[in-house]
Image (cartoon, helix red, strand yellow):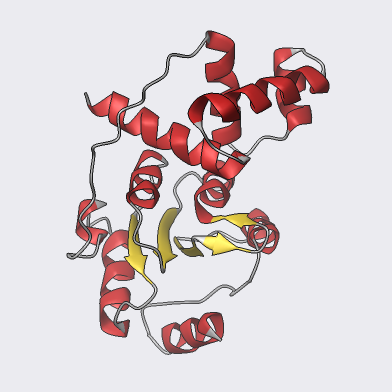
Length: 198
């Protein structure tokens, strides 16, 4: 219903051409392989993955794409991960229609920075400081997780057995206190952003 509503009110704006409205990351990637897109509105939570990792894959297909994450969650990790991934901004799903339209136009014409796209009430804390050190191999694996690569793809890249990669990932999960690949990717994207700005 939300997706249909967005498509309907954006389609009547003369400045926009709505290419497609899809419900999964796999459908999104299929569209991006076949259609040039200026701005992508991307839900943070989807049935087959989250918007951060999906957006990274989208940028691999169309590097000039501007991605705007829509979320119902007030989490600093979402903001930090989106900025590190070079997305255009983050907005609440409850955003007013005129604000959304203005934001899309401004990021399409590069008149709005990432910070400009954040809701005013969003108090983004930068208090997160990584408490761990990592080996070069662990860093490579975390980089691959942030890019959404599978165990098989990581194994091929490092020329290791898939079982070895599974063991590495299992140990990394315990080391950084996460339970899945999405959480590990978000941790690493956020960590990279904070370390970069120091």
